Image (tube, rainbow, N blue to C red):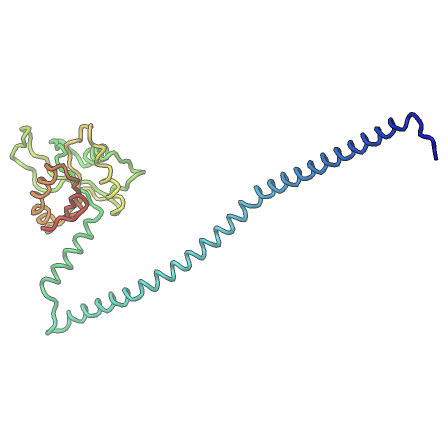
Length: 254
């Protein structure tokens, strides 16, 4: 049996320490490798995922549009056929002595055509009128009143309508004629109408801004006017949509 030297415990301790150091180093290296892999994966995901997401979004958007177009086409097709049939019947009725369109139908077509022609117009009331007023000065005054610029809204024309009034207003000055403002389309008209509240607190706060209604629409609005005043007095929420009056979200039926 070999004799154990006095240095044996010391050597054994060195060996154990060396094993522990190796294990610690191995563990640290493995942790570093795992951390690097995780960070590398995160980096790749951050760079690649946006591109993948864009491609996926494009493909989804394309498929949705295609399906939507198919759905809309399928829904609109019968309506197009029906409208075309109605047009053909109407045109045929013009040349058929025994089937002429009634005056009521003619009047309705004329009314709709008039409404369409006025759809992009605004009417301004109570805008003071001076003796030396020019078209250019009136144009600038309207832009200032409506708080719009040429870049915001395309104003095609501005003019006074009607004959000058000889009777004085409540302030003692001659009554101002209405101003007809022609805009590019109904979308721009609606945008200006939504901004009417901004006139409060300005020198134009007593000015009225409304749609350009036909004679028939004006008559219907006049009939509903008492109901409008009554609802306003009761602090109900009221608004007009052309000739139609809405009170607390419900259309008022005359």
